[in-house]
Length: 525
Image (cartoon, helix red, strand yellow):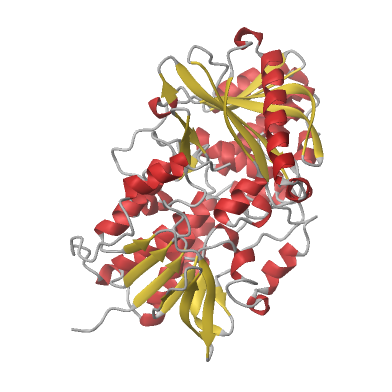
């Protein structure tokens, strides 16, 4: 019997798990090596004081069953036809100057309410709603990577995009901040700049909102960690092997081929193919020489003004379950300096819609304040005691501002946890603490990198850094695409493999439930 080819995957986040699952479906032996004690990378959550805190999913693109992306989420075990989703009827609400404006899942309701708020903006509001409708056609290609497209595939994709081309043509090269100035009402200007960094290209907000309005951006019940655990379970059931607490130190390269992965504990792993799903700033410079970094990626790192990284200062509290200001509500606040930047806006999100985040008669409340490269540098320059003090002081100041906006909960907020760009750097080796890839700013060329590494034939990289602005859909599809490219070189398809192999070869370095509990006990922040 012909011996299976072996794929060694560095990183057990969404991209790594996806690559491992598709490797098994292609008949390849697959091993995943993860630096932490549980899977998921940034798609995780943890417990504090008996409450569960979610780190990742605000909405999950690809929950509509007739999309290519849904098929991928289903294949990797993240979703199923029986998955339950949170019952939410809006994207978010903006409060400003005594008024409020909401982007409802019902576009007609949004149009009606925004027009009532600002009749003078009626024409621009109608156009906004029309363009959101067009943006429903912006679906992530997930069957195969663009570099494997033929003429017919491009023609089909062009037809399916329909009028979304108009959105890209008009809004693809202006920022959200500039777009907001098309509206006269200050409340609508705030609405356009609240949810995403104002430097983002304008169409980014419309596409995000379109997923909510189209039923293609739901929130799976149970939170981010449980979704990652479902993927891990799927990988093990297919016979994949996953090893935890294995931090990669170096990829050994000789004769234009990767020969082995060396780990911090002195062990090594060898295979026929290697896929690095780690942060690219770690891959190029630590694991292999920086000389291998693709030019487009190198340019992005060297042009932070055009390709900024995105992180956040985040805090979680418990509050009475009766408090329900709306799904996600942005409020005016007394100016607050976080990192290097002073903010006069923040949001409040309550999680009472999911019993995972409820304890007795109380629920989790969270907020996040954008942080950029400059803010990261401030956090990075702090001494340990200074860092802890800064976190606690900011957490207290946030309480004051939430209470000022919602006096009915004064004295009821109880601190649970806070985390910063340094948390993402420590836990995920994330460049400047970024939880996304590079921001797609107006006028900047979008990052789209295949993942092949010139000069190393059997090593590729996959994950959210391959395609800006990153996120879970990019991670899961790039994990799949990495395997498809290997299969293409081997002239096989996923359909050639019968996945009814049971669970032989299952192996971990510990019970997954024990690993999850280990993280929950660890102070992630």
